[in-house]
Image 1 (tube, rainbow, N blue to C red):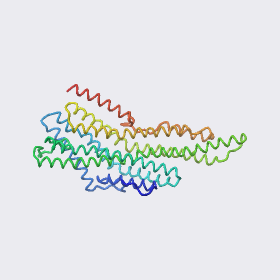
Image 2 (tube, one colour):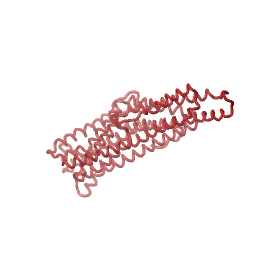
Image 3 (tube, helix red, strand yellow):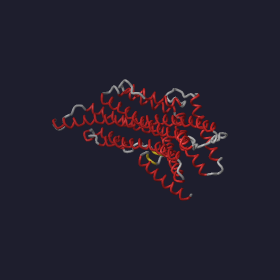
Length: 399
């Protein structure tokens, strides 16, 4: 995506959401539309999913009972559940995704007029999201390039005929030249749809998740402004006699209420994002974890280059959300520490009661959890990898 000519954060964010929507629209899901309508692109995506599912199950159960062949054929089933989860989320929760996107747009429209500090924060948020998108895009391009080039490279190197996706199409034997190239082209279209789907699905999820970091930064700005006023109150007290009224109480109270309201908005937003995307995130992390284990087992039994490449793809897809989940946990910690560092002792009695309610709520952040149990973090990813290794060793010892 080219960098917008304007530095206006609201316009940049609007352009960014339109850009993200073009990717899902390529797959037939216009997330920002008033009403979702099926078109030929939607049916093409459905056909690609059905095509892979049908031929994969055929190859699994029609190979003469060779369990190793069945294992290799089921290699990309994790990717099937991963892509299917994203596609169904966009279809079934399109209106909720649209509302969440326009809610963020309204925040940008409002706060870009509230001073240079907010403009800087909002622009930094967009730059951060663009950087994440760039990294994910390059990762998907590299991995899917390896998957699609591998069959051609092996065919040219020693004549070995390997398919892009590990299944065969009935009536198209791979030892026939024409049949092999037809199979390659069909699978190339399928893997292309999968690649677009993985990236497009990630973009809207990342858009929602990264705004948690943005809203946390904006809360920090509001707390800093309140703290500055409270510190000035302490300085003025030192210059006045005991019991003398210190001016500016209305402004301090207004800033406190603004902080409390924004923290409530932050909490509600985190809860909304969690409710909207936790099923999709759990599906991606767990299905890719299963794919990592499957490809690892295949490579341990006998080296299989497609499985080794897909191991990298699966590990990459599994870790993306876990890394971002860790950053979100840091944002929650930042919010809690900022509230704790507020000069609360300068507040009045009634104000301290309001502050206490906010502090109590900040101690229970809306963490995103896998299956409602495991927190979305790098620590969880490492625990999953340890479990995968243990299960793989156990399966290898039983073969």
